[in-house]
Image 1 (cartoon, rainbow, N blue to C red):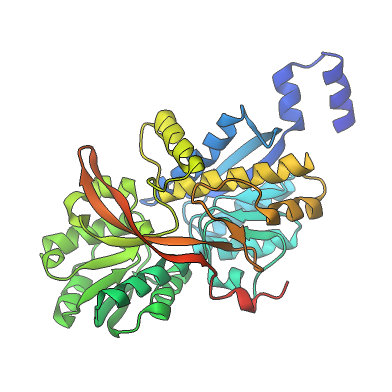
Image 2: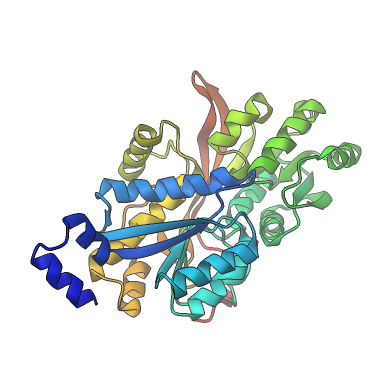
Length: 386
């Protein structure tokens, strides 16, 4: 069929756009576009699409077609979309999943089915360790990484007694584990909330009674907005400092939270102010295209697309998955975060920073204040046998 289409394209019987679509490499994006966390998927999608738009619908000079589906944050729905992508659309590259519980439902099956999965966000510990696979690459982080850097920083800041809070799902447990791996003080409390919870009054009351030196929490998306607002309403932001990974302090959350997040320090492998050519170009292009400052999620979507572009540029096609894997491992692209390489488990080796929420003339944003880890390797790489 492909040869037939190629022939009639050569004869000029089909339009150029139709011929381009017929030869395009299909990329399946399963992501969260609805629920309170829907903007996370939007950012990943928009960052990815920006890289495509910069090449006129191509990546690495190869035409691509991006198929985007909303998983609603539900593992079963994610599985259904993945099955349809493979069986109906013949897709060999997937990306986009936001939440680790969805990733754990989708990724192990698709990689066994000879599909490449490149994570633009979720990085559960299982997939970095003994559940690693040659067809799985994390282009973002391993879940624990952005908490490990905060644990190190909070230890250096001298906090002796810290209260921990996260939702009860794989990423929540990974994130608190990451913090505790590098934090050397006492744990005043460790609380796991319901995923997508909106009311934190009971947790805040218990936290107040514990009277810790500081609070570390992982509550992405709308969960973080609600917690920070309620924390400020309780007056605790004046007496007990808050720390967390960058997921709860991206620019879109800060627009909703406002002064409740001012001064909060958080961990990230990327900030819009990182001074390297790729990042300056990305931030300017994203602001021009979408009229807003990109978030961490957008940067990861963009880097994922640029990584795919590097592999397609080297191979010219997707047919030979072994060749594409080899090209992906080289990570031959300019990452917006600067240093970027894959470790033995195909997770990033990268620098990780502490940022501070500051107020500017245009609103609240993050400012990089310190590089804490250089070329950081995740804690599970040694468990991966590939």
